[in-house]
Image (cartoon, rainbow, N blue to C red; front, side, top):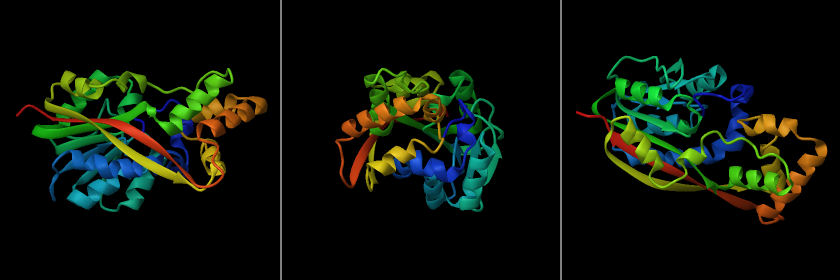
Length: 263
């Protein structure tokens, strides 16, 4: 979930997000939460929680009363708090976290950094709210290996349409790029890895309809296309997905890194 939405699409119905990106974000969270050593009772912050894909995993590990979440979208924040009673939730952005200094043993952000407008300021805030020696972890999609987004990008280009926006994702596609960001904000013992997940679709219509629900930067782009352009993109997307006649899967790989604040 973005900490800096590019359109009102991030303030849409949480269930629509679940249908589009959440189906990848949820299994990703199961892997991402294991990248740092968390224990029951640790105080943890989920930055850009969205409807709660990562929050769910954190609640399971440390307990709801030890999880705090922040997101700029009130509908998403409300959905997260309703789904996971006991968590502390506040509206806010990564660049101005509404929490006290050294409040958390760990700070995690999933699918967020490529939307943050001021990464340097966000880094200062992350370090500020993390206790000395605490853990910080972040991950973002590796663009060319996130088929949901990459296939749409390639389909648009193939039919001569302007490609859908993908804010800053390319900036973190290179090996070591996420680790380099964490090191730039002063973290130590930084490690980077990749995490791969899959999501199943009953048929191609389910995939196509998920692009039409009005979520993320693709939403305004889809609305700007003519009927003819959308039809051409749909045809090309069908080819890229392997021309499925029944159930099929798409895969997605995220680049993940974690490190510790100076003790």
